[in-house]
View (cartoon, rainbow, N blue to C red):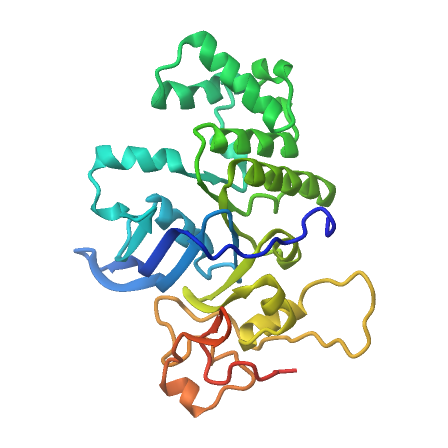
Length: 337
């Protein structure tokens, strides 16, 4: 996998997607009148830029806001606050009809494609619906387009008439990829797209995603909990904790010189194929704080082994500590081992 998925240089030319102060809160209601008594702060003030042709990984523990961020970008979750700019257009200000253009440009590959397929509908007909909704193709043109799509992702024409249950997990994910690229998008969110697959099948699907990216100049937001996959697939990595962004940098910088204590803890948990001397696993104490009642100051201070009084009182600023390597920590770069 390492040889096939070597990370390319980061193209910091044209910005495709820009997020400014993205927030997503879920209200907590209670009492007889079901009044709002608080909020679950799933995503808190996230800002970043994604470049054309780039693969940006998003990592963090379960519940850190990775998937919610992806859904908010696509409009599947309504923003609480913030601004999303795609191809120099602020998409929240667009009317419903104007947004249809961006539906074609922004797509998503889900973790479980079987859940998004109609078990009573043949795969070919399910893929044809994409062209029925967004194009004026004839029946014969739609069928040919679907067959071309199936072949593009490594399937065959004979798969057109099969039902979802007749495919393996890897084949169903290929169908999900085919559906995502059907309208020639420029941006795809991969939400745990390979986490449910066997390791050998993961490598095949990742290679397919890379091939498609190079062919169509796609940009990926690659959401994953598997840091090993992220290391070989992505160009940059964004680390999230409790809805906040805590570190952002190139794969090489982040894996070789992590600045944030949380990133160091995550990297220490990556399985290694060989036993390394003096390698220490960093075990964080305590549970993830309640996002409905986050701690003051730095959100990570309740579990951080190097936290001091300033961490409990003042929220660290988001700073560029090295070239294109950002972190939000009062003691960025200090080792916690």
